[in-house]
Amino acid sequence: MAETGAKTEPNSKRVAAAALYMALSESREDELQLKQDYQSQGLQVVAVNYGGPTAAAVPKVIERAVVAAKREGVIADVHSEEGAVAGAAHEAFAQIVNKALGLNIGGKIGIARYHEHITVAMVVEIGLLHLNEVAVGMAHRVV
Image (tube, rainbow, N blue to C red):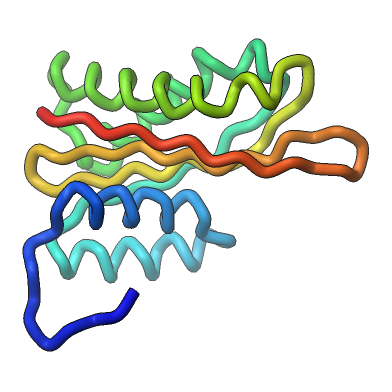
């Protein structure tokens, strides 16, 4: 992304990009560097790994997203904010699930927030022998 001299307020597209970059981060060190960069822009971000059989992953993915967002202060421990993350995580997973039914998945969830904008992005590898497929799902909510 090209940077201009003028600083602009993050909008929903920039929040979504932050969530996606967090989900694409390769290591814990990359996550921490991205987190610092985004925090300097006023965004709150977190990333968390997940994996397992697709059918069993749905509740785990949603729970991991909500717990990570609360743990890192991206959302408050209130029903509406937990529900926003849970709903966005469910929607993002729904965009991936048809490709992964019956197979194992592993990947990372990235969550980003700026004021009322919250985006959950998931990057997942779908395992079939050594022929892994890659899929991305993303959803936005407002609180």
